[in-house]
Image 1 (cartoon, rainbow, N blue to C red):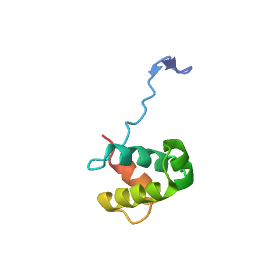
Image 2: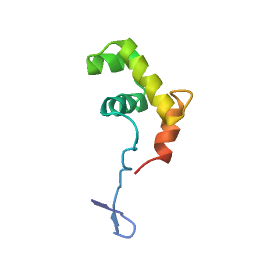
Image 3: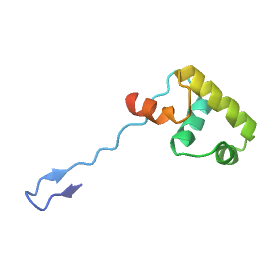
Image 4: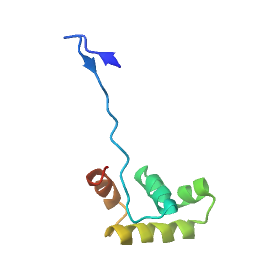
Length: 83
């Protein structure tokens, strides 16, 4: 905890909770977290030890289940659906 120099009041820095992705499988949630970090399918595949084609399938399933059309819409969805 830090204090402000002006009034000496404590400042609490709260980190927003992780978004909830209800309806996604654990693996899809994992892929979604990498997507939110801006990772490419190739990078996600490397991190998870799966093929880029499998990542592409997961991305498609994530977007379909969340009713999104593009992976770029995922960040806005995540902001709106924090637990």
